[in-house]
Every structure is written in structure tokens, then in C-alpha cells.
Image 1 (cartoon, rainbow, N blue to C red):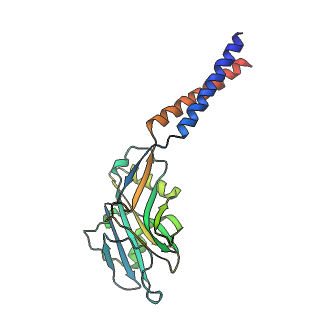
Image 2: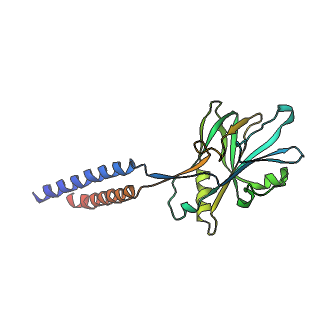
Image 3: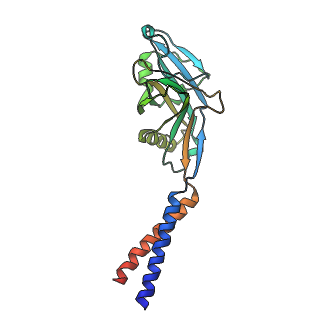
Length: 229
């Protein structure tokens, strides 16, 4: 009888552990959504001077006629101070617009560069030096006006590195064409409803507690299973 009672307790423990685990997995949690503190697009003709478009539509790809292509690169800077001390499991950069072809997302280590109040004299060599690790490669741009969500393990890794760097409160990225002949236009920081944003889901405390409870239940089951055999 004692063995039967123990068996019933262990079965109940396992049952509730599974329920808690399922509930914890279904906890979506909240999210911190950051809009750029600064953004601008620079056009760099081959061997020519630059032109900066401050706080207008992000134009990350080639914009001019095929016979006179400019290299268009859009920069965005996010204030990540609110992410300090948090556990980050995913991150997504969202852009609203349309285009054709593909784009690439790059990490920009020089946060001071992404500042609209400063005029940047930059040539192709300096641009190449600014664009660091490629975070998203060859993202397809829809020809229909819609949201585009850029996400990758490299984006998350670089964001976590930036957040955990003492004294650093910013995370900067750049958009550039991925394939020749690509063209796109996205809303900038001017539009509240369609501003580009960095979306970072944050686990709910309740899901963490439920996960710990379910883990304890499963460990308890494993411990008691040996006593029943």
C-alpha cells in the first residue's frame, strides 16, 4: 500500500510538472521596442562626394538609374541603456516599406558616426572600414508596402555584446544593398506608426518561476523513481 501511495504521489508530481512546463512555454512575455535616436542615409557615388539625407525615408539600396548607380547606405543608432541587466533571447529589426532585390544589415562599431548633427565627409574606403560584421545577409525586400523583419543569431550576439560592454549605451547598424539592381525605401524615425524599430522580447517573471517549478518536479520524479523500482 505504501508503494502504491508513493506511486500515486510521483504520478501527480509528474503530471503537474508537465502542466507547469506547458504553461511556461506559452508565456509570451513583454517586449522592449526601441526606435532610432538617430538615422540618416548617405549616397556615395563612385569616386565622388557624399550626400546625406537626414531623418527622411531610409534608402538603403541603389536609388538612381542603372547607368549612374550610387552606393546608398542607411545608418540607425539605438539607445540600449534600457536593456542593461536583462536576459536577451531574441531580437528583430523591423522596417516598413517596399522595394526589390535584397539588402544586407551590418554592425557599425562607431556609434558617434551615426549622429545627424554631424556632417560626415566619407568616401568608399572609409565606408568599408565603418561596416563591420554582416548581421543579416541577402534579406529579400517585398514589392508590396509591408513590414520587413530582420533577425539572425549574429544580430542577437552582437546586441548582447553591445549591451554587456561597460560604458556603452548604443547599438548602431547599417543597411546596404545585397544584390546589384536592388532598390528600396523604408519609413524613417519621422513616422510614429511606421518608424523602424528594434524589438527585444523579455521573458515574464512568471514563466521563469513556472520553469523552475516544473524543473523541480521532474527532478523529484527522477529521484523517487529509483525508490519505487
